[in-house]
Length: 346
Ligand SMILES: CC(C)(COP(=O)(O)OP(=O)(O)OC[C@H]1O[C@@H](n2cnc3c(N)ncnc32)[C@H](O)[C@@H]1OP(=O)(O)O)[C@@H](O)C(=O)NCCC(=O)NCCS
Image (cartoon, rainbow, N blue to C red; front, side, top):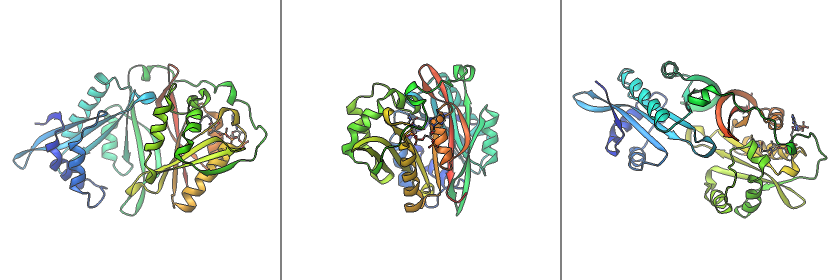
């Protein structure tokens, strides 16, 4: 018999035991971290657990966490599943089924996604049996015991995201013309003092169209976002023309066994697009990541209809690794995203 209930902070010992026994888990995970994580629920996470009798006592045998998106990804939630290795699939299947029901029928989630190791066919099959489809293969995205392993992204669409055709609209007029005269471009490190220039660029309709930025973001809110970015995991680069900031990119990376992976996002002032600014920024970010930080995988996401960005990334060695359906929302329509990766040694 399996009981499904909301996670409690007192479950931390079981969750810790489950986590350290999972294949591919980091060695020497600190129990304190797990205890702290369970003691501090956040507004956008909703963890469920499956409890079954194990060695004579009720034990958490599986856990499904719903991580809710916001803004233009408010319809998206990420599901993570953890399973006790010494028990069968019953608890995992039940907790996962219940998590799908809660996410879709209570939180109105329209895209549920998960990322699994390619070396875990049992869980891939479990998600597939619940209507998830494989969408992308992220090459060499995690290091497990000395080996770089690919990961598989799976997603399940529901409601209008599953039914409606998704946006393939052309970019706004300002960014459709090709190859304009190339100005002299300088690249430098970013600073908190650049926040006003960043706010101005983030607020342009052409930039909002191609990114996850929100219309009508307040200056205070953007300033706070820039100030709060952890410097230890984020490296901003600015492009300048005639002393004016005209383009921004940021290299972000994960910790521990994902430190070899860098994530990039970029945007260029609408008046300076198609002049080589994006190219100069990307070149600098690649050099920083690969030549100075030893990263071997760079990753980014781009809307399927963003022809200019796609052309730029392809020219710089990024390859399409998959398509995330209904991954974002733009002007009343869902938009698909291509996930692209560049491997240093490929
Ligand atoms: C996407 C973006 C970052 C690219 O930067 P950029 O400075 O405009 O790009 P560049 O001029 O360096 O290079 C663009 C390339 O695409 C080509 N291009 C331009 N318009 C194009 C179009 N409509 N279709 C196909 N290719 C196009 C250019 O010819 C150029 O290639 P080339 O150097 O071989 O000639 C920028 O346009 C931008 O900020 N757009 C809005 C926000 C956004 O979409 N960000 C990306 C999120 S993934």
